[in-house]
Amino acid sequence: MASIVCVASGCVSPVEDEAPLDLCGWHLAVAADWVDSRDGVTDVLPSPCRLCGSRLGVRWPSGWLCAVCEWRVGDAVDDELPAPRVDVVYYLRFEDRVKIGTTAQPRQRLHAIWHDQLLAFERGDRQLERRRHERFADERFARTEWFRLSDALSAHIDELRAGIDDPWSLFARWVSEATARR
Image (cartoon, rainbow, N blue to C red; front, side, top):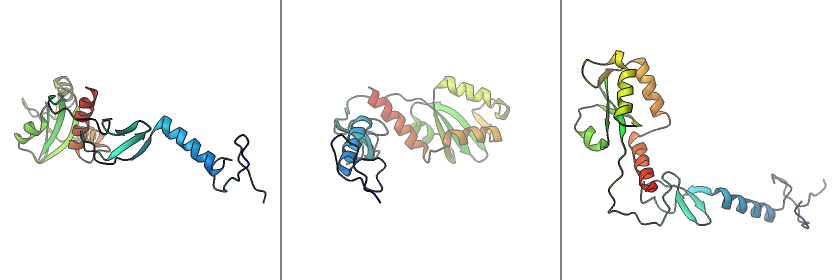
């Protein structure tokens, strides 16, 4: 079998059999470094993000960014700034009923409501909450924010939960993103 040589200008080094391109190991490494400098490399952060706690980051030649909230690793978190306001529509289950409500302080609000399970969060304010109440009006218990757990409501909640193991982690990401934007 004939040995393939690197196609880079002036290079006569052999190409490894498994190489995806006709480039020697050194030229493949140079190409990979070039792509990494342009697109960043997703990897585990050296330490958890100080803003959102994520361990996933993107390494750039200029430093690390958190892959979740884009906080620059090493930047100080300004503890004097108030936390940003992030309004959410929440879905709580109690037995066979679901409460659809809204708040900017979900930990306090949910602590005050008797419930079995936090089903989901959806980013939005009273306007979105009103639209959800209208959408599921047929399941609503009169003059309350409680709804019968119907197939349609279950499907909507399942859509919100898709890929989300813990609604609180989603809320934390929204807060950290809002903080990073400041």
